[in-house]
Length: 216
Image 1 (cartoon, rainbow, N blue to C red):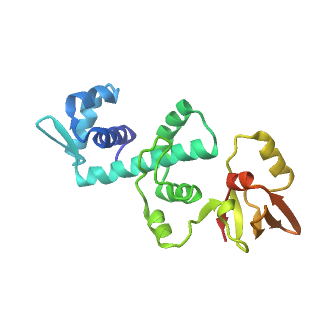
Image 2: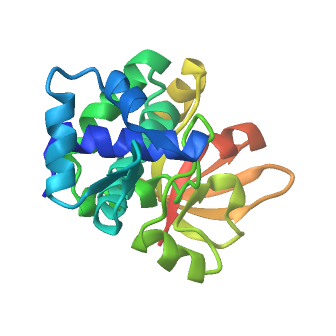
């Protein structure tokens, strides 16, 4: 198992390779910003995560598998922080760097499912898919989706609400439409009408697109 400092280097090699195709040792060492960067890189070579030939750094099969998991965790964390928590850019990146070292596979898959198996991070970089994504791709419909994509008669639980308008959140909260609440879509036109317990609520398309649900 790799250490956080080793994971940082594996992640950096992956991203440089993604952008430029070739990773050179000296520029890589300068980018690492760790006092023991060369020592950590040597440990990765010794443990068969990385090879260096003619000053060119490459991930081994073992190293690529680990780097892929780190990249997946980081970019999913960015999506969660950006899409759900509306965290600013600087804080989003620093927090994602911390999350990538502590998330296990089960939590990572749960976040991925919650977000509807996104394929790119907020910066447009590809998110390596996991087993949960492969399973979702075999299904006709995603597990998590905007309420606006539900079909009449569908039943779902509210997963999360993404909106920058506080008055919209206040309105939904006052109606009791919160994460965890089960709803049934009664109709789609001319407005969305949902059944929540014994109550029917009409909402417009803009609000329906802000509410993400998990089908049940």
